[in-house]
Amino acid sequence: MATNTLSILKPSVNNLSARIFIRAAGLEFEELDVWGKKSTPEFLAKDPADLTPLLEEAGLPRGSLWESCAIMQYLCNKHGLDRFYPTEPAERAMVDSAMFYLIGTFYPLLARATYPTLGFAQYAGEAATADVDDATKTKAAKDAEAALAPPLEAFHSFFLSGRPFVGGDRPSIADIRWAATLEFLRSIDYQFPAWAEEYLSRMEEALGDAYTEPATDVREYVAYVKSQAAGVPA
Image 1: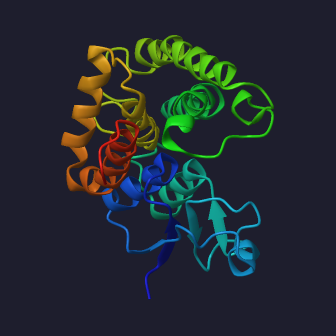
Image 2: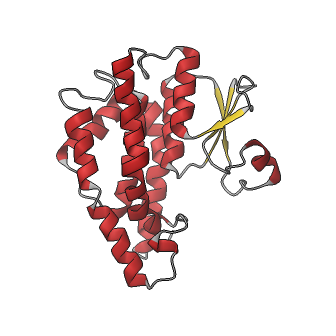
């Protein structure tokens, strides 16, 4: 039996982060695609938040752990993977800050901008779930898309200033989280700054198949969604 069991949804960039990491780290794992299999009593017993990715491991206090950043942090700490998550306090703080900035600021905007196109459910209280007309929902998504540029540039000017990755000369778990997230912007034909395209290329080149293989699942899903919107038969 694998040391780690990772329950995932292949079209998700949150899941993609953990999928890239566990491959790049060379960890033994069993990957379970739970598309259409969540929300069951058995799954909720392990994961009452009903979230993926879900890591199951005997050493965890509850036997399981969700949230992609927490999973990557835990596995780095457990296996001494300093190359992905530095132990020097200042460098680790930069990695943590980059991840928390994505989760708290960038990703909510990205979700509002892309989830309607991707067909993903949005959160209660969002315009997309409110009792408003379609024009209002479309405007909200466009407003979120327009709001992506400042935090994206802040990431570039601060976390990547003078270095190819947040982690310095090699990708960190923050880089994995950011690169995976940026994959979803393809769904709305977002105009990437040149530096962002170069950053994604550096990430894929640095991590090789560990990045490309799981990223292909997300890319194929995005391509499928776009083809359906364009009226192209599946």
